[in-house]
Image 1 (cartoon, helix red, strand yellow):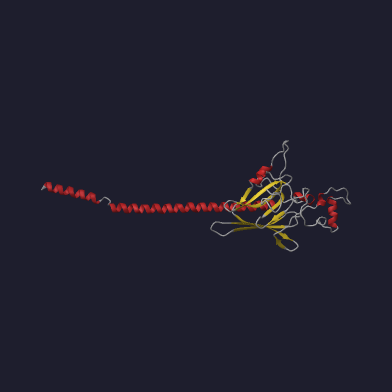
Image 2 (image 1 turned 90 degrees about the vertical axis):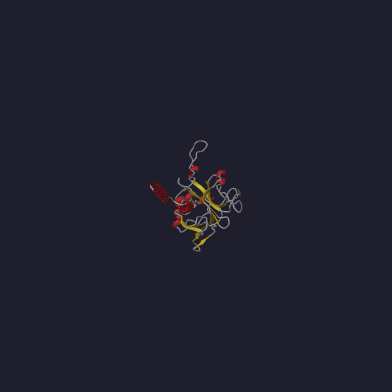
Length: 294
């Protein structure tokens, strides 16, 4: 009897311990729940990464847009124009399939790529290349997209090959580049400016950017020039107070009602000793239509 009772007790203890273990179904259910949690965490982390990438791309695009429009606005407010040597200070716009904006400006050191124009002559004499000719245009890429690019060169020098082959890319995915000038005669915006020996009082620049899976981003700025074209009478040497050019002659003409621009008119192409009509720094990025071909 004692042996039987001991055997029964030991068997009950063994059965009791086995009842506390997990069954195969419970283990499989726990693994399934754990897998669902891992999948949810992975999906959330993937969404966070994608949102971060999209946010960085959007931020970079907005920064590019700001830099591009800022470069155009900063350079236009530094524009230079002198009628006595208008050949080097040509102001030209072109819209349509081959948009272009070119002019001469005295640029600060903070302007993009200014460091490349702070060089010395072969004799070691430092040269001031702050006065440069600028050309804004569009360049097509292999994928069909267009970039807003900038080329620049000192106004007395032809554009070097490195600036031609590797221009500064200001913005990518630019679909439209439009420059309009305010016509004081018609009081309207004009997409053409034939008075290449004068600068307009006001310019409106529009940039349109292609946004993936979204509408176009359009930025428009109206830019007024802090000064106007300097008449040639002011640049001429003053021989006497009665006449012969210079500031005194210019003031006498103004007082007599002649006006600042009465001597030269307001339209016409820039003269050129070479017969091309374009300054030495000008470069045609499209290779046809105007200026020198690349």
